Every structure is written in structure tokens, then in C-alpha cells.
Image (tube, rainbow, N blue to C red; front, top):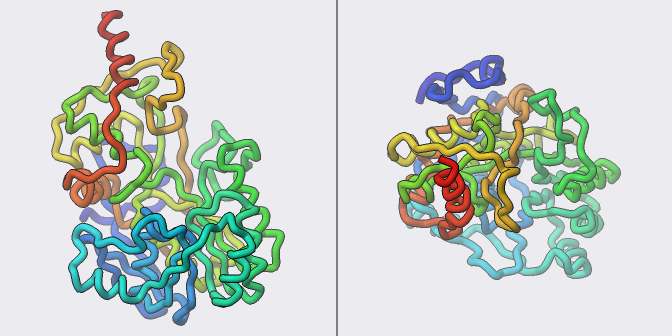
Amino acid sequence: MAAMASLKSSLLLPCPLSDFSGAALSISSQTRRRSWRSRGATIKVSAAADSKNILVMGGTRFIGIFLSRLLVKEGHQVTLFTRGKAPITQQLPGESDAEYAEFSSKVLHLKGDRQDFDFVKTSLAAKGFDVVYDINGREAVEVAPILDALPNLEQYIYCSSAGVYLKSDLLPHFETDAVDPKSRHKGKLETESLLESRDVNWTSIRPVYIYGPLNYNPVEEWFFHRLKAGRPIPIPGAGNQITQLGHVKDLATAFGLVLGNPKASKQVFNISGAKYVTFDGLARACAKAGGFPEPEIIHYNPKDFDFGKKKAFPFRDQHFFASIEKATKELGCTPEYDLVDGLTDSYNLDFGRGTFRKEADFTTDDIILGKKLVSV
């Protein structure tokens, strides 16, 4: 992997998009280190605290899958709170039988619906968890019963979203920037306000776009479907909109680093990749990651089309990226994956194996391409 770029240079607007320089994970700590090997990648995490009794709210999909493995490897007792509709554990591509057996034998499960507030209060109170990782909480009303049930809780670690920031012409977004109380992530913003108002030690993580193996959102998968089919990639506007993606394993690492960390107490951290990328650059990066030819990119004006309820492109049509400087300085963590390496990891361990979450749907593409052909 290429040498790690300095934080200063990584926070500049992108250099030429063909230059995706790698960034080696660097975590400064005086404490004991362990390595978490997941599907071919090694992530080093400092053991910032003694063994804890940890509850993970939502641990059977994407972020929770990687986070729960990290916590178990760090020696913590981990309980997953889910509705039990999906398998509690699943063997990951690249994970040995021995590794999977060890993990599945150690993780515990608490079946329930977090909307059943009475059950949440009684079941959690009986367990007396030290730490809660809330990965799937969307509304403050879902969090209050957990706090009520655990008066001696040591830390509440919440997965928020960079989508709470108010749209601005001044970028990147910093943790101190204005937020949008009307955003579609307002529930997460209200949850942060609840945590701040309660007598609890909390930390909130605000990812930008998350990608990686097992991603249930059509981020990289959207591009891979089109590349595999040999189709043009329709991108709104001029394709120079700047955005940011962070690998799920780097996000799991960040979640691990805030555990028991006094610098994370009552703090918000943006977490994502070290560099930004344009929409066109992302299409080319996905092609490179999957070993596809240079993609044909078709630009279009979204205002010229009525797609009904269908979403023609998986990203918001604007510049959207955030500074990770605070997390780097305070937590001592920088991303392990550069964009092409991360997309390659995702492709090789997921889409490239023939697995994906959603079937390809080229309906909106055909509408765009049909009009383009007529206009030509």
C-alpha cells in the first residue's frame, strides 16, 4: 500500500482523480494492541478499556457485523439485540471455519423489538450492560428507554450521520457546523440532543457515505451492476460534484477506538475516507476496482426527467463531504483503505463473488439513454 498522505494534503480538494494514494492505518496509543483480521484485511485497534459487557443494537447487518467481530476479538462480552428475523451470525467470505466458530460461540443474542419499550426496559435492566453501541437507532424515542433501563451505563456510542448538517457552500463539514433540523436524518439529530441532555457519557459518530462488503445500500453496487452489464453510467449534472466514502471496516475501527476513551466523552466525530472524489471519479474508481474497462459516462440534467418514485442515482446531487481532522487528532486514527483499495475489497469479497443486496434495475437508465439518443 502506498505511503500515508499527510492529513493536511488529504483534506485538500482532490488532486487528479486517477491518483488514489493509499493511507496506512495509524493509531497512536500507549495501550495494548491487537489485530483484527477480517476477510483479508488487518485492522489494529487499541484496547482502550478492560473487558466490558456490551450491547449492540442491531448487529446482524453491515456495520454491526464488522463491529461485533472487532469487539469479541478485543475480549468483550457482546450481546446483539435484534428481532431475530435474520441469522444472528453468518460466516463471512474470507473468514476461516475456525474464526467463525470462535466468534459465533462467544456472541450472545437478545431477541426483541426495540419499539417495545417495556420489554427493552425490563430486559436490559436485568442484564446491566456497561456499554451500548446503537447502530440502528433512528429516533430519540427509541433511545430513551435504553437510558432509563441502564442508570449505571458507562458509555452510549451512537451511529449518527453526516446527513444532519445544513447544506452549505463552505465545505468540508466540521462537527461544529450548523445542522438541519428538517433533514431526513432529523431523528438522529434529536437523538444526539437527547444524549446531550441526559446524565450519560455518550459519543456520536457521523459517517458520510459508507461502502464495503455486505453493504445493504446501493452505493458501489449501483456502479458494479452497470459495469458488469457493459452499460453506460448515467451521472447527473457535469459529474464534478464532490463527495466522500468511508470503508465499513474503517468505521468499525473508529467505533472501537472511542470505547472507554476519555477524549471521546460527550463528543461528535465525523468518520469517512481521507480523500474526496467526484461522481465521475467514483465511476472510474469502481471500474478499476472490478477490473472493468474505462466506463462510458453519460451526463444528464435531472430536471429534464420525471422518474416518479424511482431513484436514478444513489447519491445526493450536490457537493457533500466532511472533515475527519478531529477524529484523526483526538482518536489517533486515519483510514486504512484508500478508495480504490476499499472498492476492490468490496468487489472481491461481495459483488465479484456473485452476491449483492438488490437486483439490477436499469429502468431510469433506459429513460435517460433513450432521450439522449433521440436528442442526438
